[in-house]
Image (cartoon, rainbow, N blue to C red):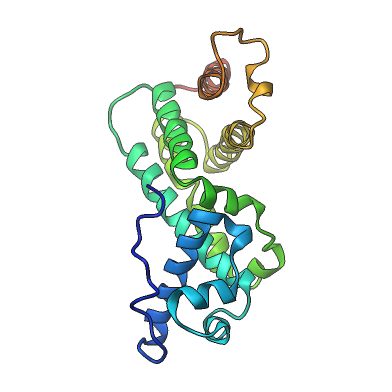
Length: 224
């Protein structure tokens, strides 16, 4: 379940926590609120009420709600990275199979943590993140599991080409998953017949994308 954290309102009281403890307490409460009501329901007042602190205390830790969203997204990206890295480190499978396994792991994450996954792309934090270089580093780290697979199988390609392939392939898979999660799966189902719909249509589309990519690599006469 998404919301697997305990209710925090009974344990939090003013002056009971260090700054770091309070930071985690706020993020835990924010996580719970997003899990139940979505990111649009997140307010300093709501968080403060949940943990037993006045709203001003929230802003003493996070200068703005945008910064709070930044840290909440960072938690989501850390969880996503761990799941993708675990998948990428599996030893069995062909190049094409391992790419699909990684894509399947991404699909499962978008299902299991949908409110948080959606928040990564729907929250307006563009200006805020410019002042937090660590956030960009977390974004870049998400590509590492895919890069691990590409480096393992794409012998003879330089690092810049692998990086380009990684961004293109990742963006394509993400785009298909986003269509599915946001209820635009009809675009994925077009031409697939009545036997495939919803998640099945998504998986079929991603398999086609990956097989086409692998075929293209072979056509470039690069050993895989």
